[in-house]
Amino acid sequence: MVGNWKLNPATAATAKELFVGVRNGVKGVRQDVVVVAAPPFPFIGELSKLSPSGRVLLGAQDVFYENGGPHTGEVAPTMLLSLGVTHTIIGHSERRAAGEVDEVVAKKTVAALKAKLTPIVCIGERKRDAHGDFYMTVAKQLRASLKGVEKKEASKLVIAYEPVWAISKGDGNGKVATPQDVEEMRLFITKELSRLYGRPIAARIPVLYGGSVNPRNVEQLWSQGDVDGFLVGGASLRAADFVTIVKAVI
Ligand code: PGA
Image 1 (cartoon, rainbow, N blue to C red):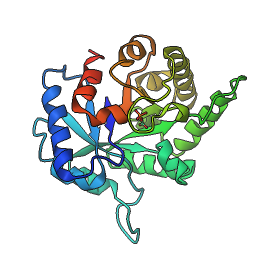
Image 2 (image 1 turned 30 degrees about the vertical axis):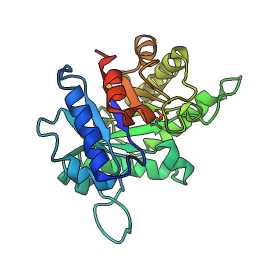
Image 3 (image 1 turned 90 degrees about the vertical axis):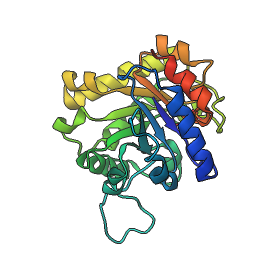
Image 4 (image 1 turned 120 degrees about the vertical axis):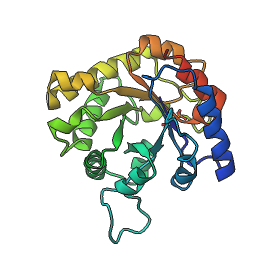
């Protein structure tokens, strides 16, 4: 269960408040439910001091593929690791819209795995067509985004299916995919992963859904969508809403 805070909140103080709200809210939640908060980079150091139990893990929203050198503005996998970060989102559609291409997503994914960070690799079609061509778009994007990931590393991947048309404007109330859309795509993605890595490994790769998940639709998506968890944007900015979403899967 991943909260993608995107470019929010505005200050370190409010980031702390949000993180503490989530941490307190999920206290009793079963240990095998992995809860990750992905704040903006500048807040990670401060927040890493707030979860001594590690109940809420820290994620980054992006990572670079080198661990040092002349790369102004980038953040290295080893830097994140040194702050206790365990996960990193890679290839989010908002980054892809800003010019990030599959080759770069793949390099970042390989580098994250090498550093022992769990990559949450985002894929998803911009729009749907009546003929189902978007399935091929997703398959192509998946293969290109995982180029160079070896079979022995593949079981450490997490895939997030986020159809771009379902991502909210920031409040978590966009046009959510139907549970059936999600279920069908989940099966398709796992089939594609088994082509790449074989069935036993594909079966171990969690597939998340993201796009306007909120407290009102999460139960249906969970019971009928056949995914392993959710990548939550807008609704993760309200601790109570995110906690309700986390609790829907137990
Ligand atoms: P949303 O964002 O929940 O606000 O639609 C999801 C995401 O982009 O990760």
